[in-house]
Image (cartoon, rainbow, N blue to C red; front, side):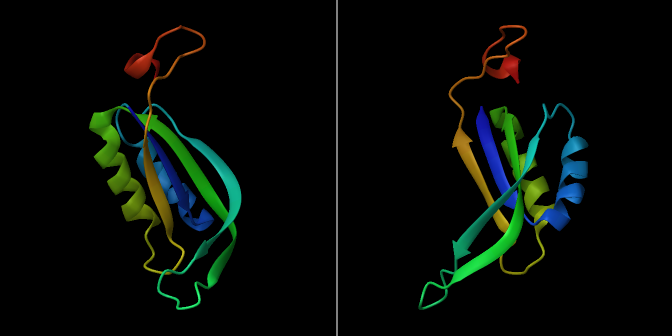
Length: 108
């Protein structure tokens, strides 16, 4: 299992979520509004690029779904402009469904 965290431009969120929803067997997605900043790696001064708000997507998916989810988010969130966002993939050690007690892939 992998946890996928994506930070994207808010105006792209609806489009990304629509395409994620269309993926068969995708368990779900947490969406939140966040604030943050980034540094430009190409700037000699390490200039800070500020953004008023971002949309953060959080998903836990089976290993076999990772590439599909990554491609979906990247293709729909992409504008080609600075600050398009980032996607992080983190190993999810376990999951527990509170209601059923199921664990691992069965919990997601």
